[in-house]
Length: 100
Image 1 (tube, rainbow, N blue to C red):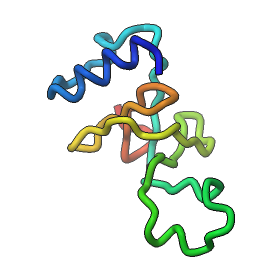
Image 2 (image 1 turned 90 degrees about the horizontal axis):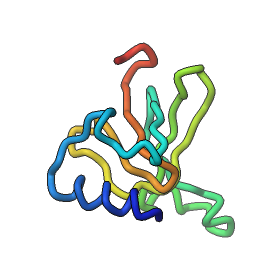
Image 3 (image 1 turned 90 degrees about the vertical axis):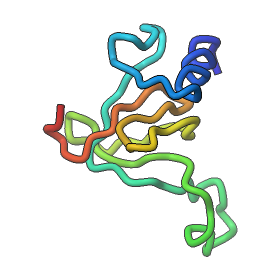
């Protein structure tokens, strides 16, 4: 994790609510629509029942251009499910592709 992401994680854990122009520009921001919590089943190749008990550690949804997209491991997620900080950047979560 980069120092910028560590600082952002600390701020988020303190209860700070982010705005897109307040996030360090070195942290990539993404949008994810129609998303769900997902389990990385490739991490458990020999256990066919893992989907029923494993902790969801990623998000799966659609990018703004309509392609399937998934996040890195979730580091911190908003209680209101509006955003998530993941290993691969900051994700704004939308319920519909055309949401602001």
